[in-house]
Length: 242
Length: 242
Image 1 (cartoon, one colour):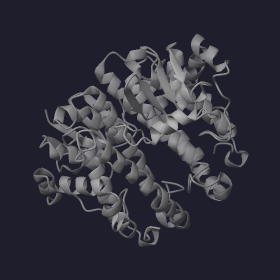
Image 2 (cartoon, chains in turn orange, red):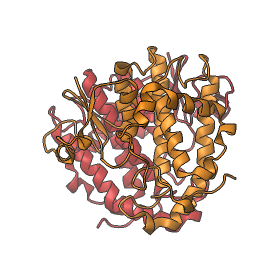
Image 3 (cartoon, one colour):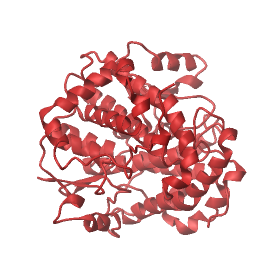
C-alpha cells in the first residue's frame, strides 16, 4: 500500500518530519499536493469535507488506505513500527513519543519567533515583537531544548548515538531536521553549537551521512529552506549567542 | 499499582487534563507535589536527574511503576485504554490522539495570549503584545478550533455525544476543560458560544454532570482557575466577539 502524505507545496514545514521518516525507510509514498496528477484541491476537499468522520485540523496528515492520521507526532508514532523506525519495546516507544512531543513544542516556538502576534498577519506587521520573541528564543529556549536533548543522548543506556535504544528512530530524524532548521534560521546563534552539544552534533552528522537521507537531501524532493516555512532566516532576528 | 502524577501545585495547568481522566475513571493516584508526604523536591530531583534514562522535559509527567510518561497527549494515550477511556478500535485511538494534539496546540495558544513574547518575563512586561495576540486568539483562533471540534462531533458516525465512538474518552474530558478555561479567561468572547457550538456545549454539560466529575469539581482537589495558570482572566484581554 502506498502512503499518501498531504502537506502544502513550496515549503519543508511540518511535512518534512514525515518525509524524512518515509525517505529513510525507503517507503513507497506519494506527496499528494506536489504530485502533478493530484494537487492541492484534493487536500482541501478532505479538509473541508462535510461528511468525513476523521477530518484533520490542518496539514500534514497521512492516508494509509482508509486511515487518516493527523499531526506530526501522531503520524510518526503510527508509522514508526511499520517503517522499522521505532523501538520494539513498548516502554521505549512511549518515551520516544514524549521526546517527539517536545520537538513539536520546540518547532512551534521556532515558528512563533517570526509570528509572535498573529499567524493571519505578515511578518512585517509584527517585526518588533518578533525581535523580542526571537531574542528570548535564542537566549533561553534554544539552550533549554538542546540542553535537554543532549542530556537524553548522554543518559541513553544503549549509548549516545541515538535518543532512544540502539537504533535510529523517527525522533532522531526529527532532531536532525530541527538542527538543520535552526542553523538555517539562526546561523549566528547556532555558531559553535557543536562544542556545547557534542552528542547532538554527532547525531546530526550521522543522520546526514545515512545513504538514503543523503540521497534525499541531494534530490529535488528536498526543497530548500525559505521564508515561507517554519524556519526562516531574517538576519534581524539572529545574533551571536549570549 | 498507584499512578503518580507529577505537576506543579497551585494551578490547574496542563496537569488538569490528566487529573480529569484519573478522576473520571476513579483511578488510584497520588498527586505527588500536592501530597503532604511528598512534595516538589521529589519532582525536581527527577527532572534534574543526572542518570535517569527517561527524563521528562517538563511537568506534567506520570509514573506508572518504572515507566515515566511525559506530555499530556502521551500520558492520555497511555492511560486511555487502562482507564477505559479510549476507543477499543485502534484506528479510532489514532484519530483520538490527533484530536488530543489539536487540543494541545489550542491550549498552547491560549497560554500565549498572556505570554506572547517571553515565558521568562511577567505578563505586565508584555501587556501590549498580549492585547494584540489575545485579539487574534478571540477573533480567529477560538472560532477556528471550536468550529473544528463542532464539526468533528457532528460528523461522528456514532452520534454527536462524544468526539470519537459512542463512549466518553480522555479527549472529551480535555475538550470540557478547554471550554471551562476559555469561559473563565474570556467570558465576554465566550458569551453565547452555545448558539454557535451546540454540540460542544452539550458535551460540556454532559461531562460536568457525570457523577465522578461533578464530585471532583466540588472537591478541594479541584483548584480554582487563577492568574498563574494557563487560562487567566485579564479583563483587558477579553472583549465581545466580533
